[in-house]
Length: 167
Image (cartoon, rainbow, N blue to C red; front, side):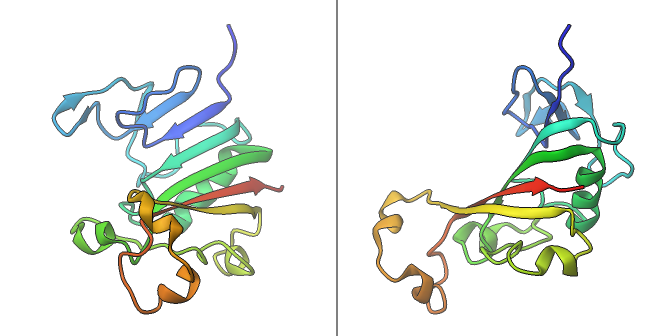
């Protein structure tokens, strides 16, 4: 039996074969979902040994958690050296961020760049790539988005961060 070395945190309806799928409940939006581990991601430590996973996916979860920095420190603990961490979050100035009353945290394209990981005491995380995810595809064709974001909310929808763990 192959040991699963990929972790899907907050898997919800996105069950991935060959991964360890973790969520707080086996019901999402009233629908039963398949889980491998039922766990509250606000509870520390996570039920995994140090240096367990080569790849970790955190998809639209950090916005809801009590302490995303503590969560990411825990992710670093359970990740192997050179592990790939992929994070999907809602952009702080998206329409979803303004309408979701249960969001606790906001993220922008600058959340993990430069010296930010060191400021958060997450120096083991190295930002490899930042990518905007557009729900409304026409937005990706707008010119000067980098400057327009200062004037228009709702311009960006979601963000994908790819990070590497360096221990």
